[in-house]
Image (cartoon, rainbow, N blue to C red; front, top):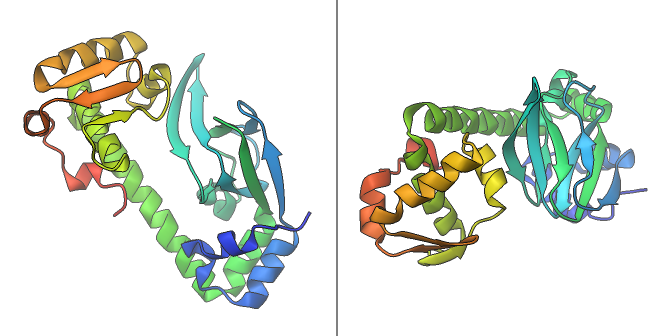
Length: 232
């Protein structure tokens, strides 16, 4: 099925400056599919046959080893995953599953590589996106390696507050078990971390968060753009 959401995809930085001819060629083999929640889209270790674009919904990127599993990132519209495996023609390093009902565009990886070689603007955009992904990985590693569990949670809450328009009250974007995985904790450690933040003005009611003392929390968390600004 041809991609009906072409204009939305065309607006992505990855595709914005490529020629119309190459964009049409790239979309010729693409198709869109609707998926219900909790459907595994790709499995780590398998060949990267398609570049995926999340048009609606949300996708969890996760990995497993020796009976353990961890969430790596959440992909929301309109975003691609996993670009590096597509360009390298390499196996996926992560698995992906839908978190909610999602609409996904799939572009054959072979076509992406062919246009990458033919369209210089598309190639520059891919390099820019891969560079951004690399910087995000470095920031995530700094967050895990340099901060205590309490500091990681405090800074996550400040980032989520910013995404939720900056109000004193907001909701967590997903359940606490998955949050623990994202932050590199066990659910038990996350529960203790929430209790540990109470003296810094954090109140928790289910997935609802309230920051009673913004300045106190920020003094404790010490947010840094070199770790917490995932847009640069």
